Image (tube, rainbow, N blue to C red; front, side, top):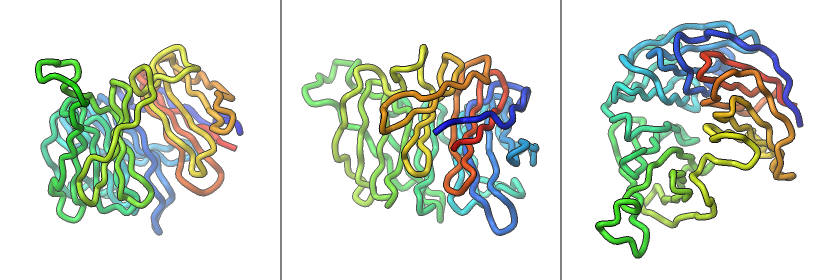
Length: 284
């Protein structure tokens, strides 16, 4: 497995680019790249030349997270302005908007079925879930206090939730916290199942980088991982070998987002950075 640089765009946004995801293809258009920036905008890009397909507005502060619905028609953005915006990808018309303080929305993810939207709850120590048919909040999944923790022990009373992921069948949610634990929930019953512990440092730190790992994504078949780091690099990891097999140094500031294009060939990986740039790579 290897990466080869295809295209880089400098000054893709006016400020740091913190978020990236792929919007699935529809009958009317190919898959697109979606990026979110501290310049308060979301932008659409057409691979492989990274042609700007449009600037999407609607927030009054920086965009911290973006997510695409599996249908390819709808996307979501979360901003430091304390709002999550749901919009039509092609027309930018607002479908829904609801308040969510930035300390409580760190990452957005639609479930594979497209029926739910989850948010890693940051300082609220929870995962919030919205029903995509009504856009009503239907669950707040609270991470329980560790066993043996005393009420006065502030260090153990809350977990800062950075990331969230769905199981393929949409029946489980896992979230990663800064204290190194992963919490798993049953979404059908809204019930906490268990913690997974094993990190000796906060989730987001991996051996191989010389700084924080700020983003991670797996390719479709699960054979490879890509990571972006505060050390300004993107690394490709072979899961079977449990080792980094390649390092890309396209960016000159920390890399906040990496995203493999789901399914299909040829394989593509995108990365975004505090340096305002986007890089696109061929993955083979």
